[in-house]
Amino acid sequence: GAVVSQHPSWVICKSGTSVKIECRSLDFQATTMFWYRQFPKQSLMLMATSNEGSKATYEQGVEKDKFLINHASLTLSTLTVTSAHPEDSSFYICSAPGMSAVKTQYFGPGTRLTVL
Amino acid sequence: EDKVVQSPLSLVVHEGDTVTLNCSYEVTNFRSLLWYKQEKKAPTFLFMLTSSGIEKKSGRLSSILDKKELFSILNITATQTGDSAIYLCQIQGAQKLVFGQGTRLTINP
Image (cartoon, rainbow over all chains, first blue to last red):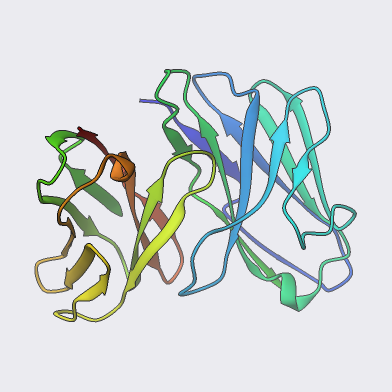
């Protein structure tokens, strides 16, 4: 089946630094990818829709200057958390819809960000 | 290896029927199990389960967790065509998140 990978799996950084998270569709192309964040014991929260060849669409309340999204190719989207602070510590998860008409979402394994 | 297996993969029933969706898991340091309904782009949160044997209920939907046998079920009674969706099970471990492959539910009128 379709696979979505994320890199890194886990990152620890100092407050004020920027962190880049990659999301790759390994055996299919994705013109759209979705980025979520999830705090422990809470639901997924959609942050933005990443669109290949155009600007990302952000959900209400998500700062686009803080969470930079670049859909560099049909298999890669990146999320950069700029000037990270401890409150940004969370799981960040991406997903990509499959190519079938049914539009199954394939989820990456998540990236755990810890900001000290 | 951590994994989440949902069954069945696909289910087609008639409106008014009751369905039971299954999620079994193996995960290190289990924290919680979540059920979502996936229709369009973002999954819609349904339930979060952390304790065994306590049923969570919302309208026609209910869910329960068995931490001894490592599974959860999602029940939908008196199904409606609007229940047609993919239902996702997610496990939160101490270090990892794992999604099941989803159950595609189709409700025919």
